[in-house]
Image 1: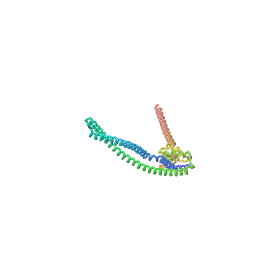
Image 2 (image 1 turned 135 degrees about the horizontal axis):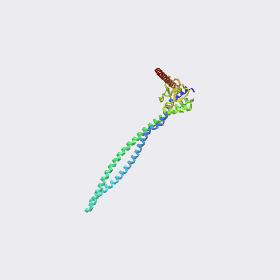
Image 3 (image 1 turned 90 degrees about the vertical axis):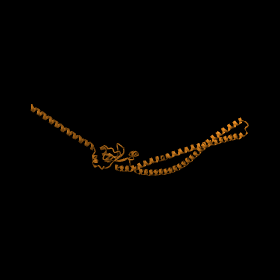
Image 4 (image 1 turned 60 degrees about the horizontal axis):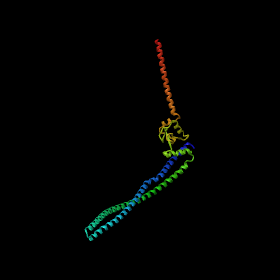
Amino acid sequence: MVTTEVFEKLKELQGILARKYELEKSIEDAPKQLGSQDEFLSKLKKEFIEKNTDYESIKNSILELKAELEVAVKTREMGEKNMDTITNHREYEALDKQISEASLKEAGLRKDLQRQEKNLTELNDTIKSTEAMISSLENDLNTSRTALENQIADYKNEHASLSAKEDEISPGLDREILFKFQRIIQRNSEGIVAVKGGVCMGCHMILPAQFANEVRGGESIHFCPYCSRILFYEQSEDINQDEFFNEPGSLADLEGDFIEDEDEDEDEEFLDERDSSDDDMDDEESDN
């Protein structure tokens, strides 16, 4: 296949693969969007169960307090009733003690009962509020889950369409090049980029002149030595810069010219020194 055709196929395939990999990541990450809601709902349900357990415990405690209160009330009332039948001071003291202890216990039990009944009422309100919140969150979560499932279905349909286009374009491409191309796009979203003025437009690194000229020739597929993207030549707006990479070995030629200029300067300097030395010798001979 002509290299130009390969480049055109890769350019067309690049957008398809980039979008395809983007969809794959969206499909993979989609369930995570509901993760926080699921976690919060689970926490609420756990709290709801714990509060119901506490509620039943307080209810049982109230029943026990009522039973104890009933005993204390009966004990006090019986003592008060027997006060009419006492015949001596000792009986009076015993009944008075019984009534006092029963009254104190009754007062304490009524206070505890009042506090527990208040706790039960507050806990009941909290349970109802939590239950309503759980119901609302479950509805919202079900709605979100349905919307997400529809979105994932759309993603999968688009992914299937892109895969079909990929299958249409891929035939004829070298399998190894295609494999590398796919891996590059997964990392960078761009797998094929232009070379302008000897610079890779993917990583913006200056390429070796000889290598840039080979890319410009377009006779084979070249990968950027810095970012691994596939390279193709594109005319730069800076014409002089393009001309700089026009001829193979241009940098070497410039370096050679520079060395030749240095050699010429050194030769001229050597000749000047030799002529100066000859003149000095002639002067010495004349003096003698």
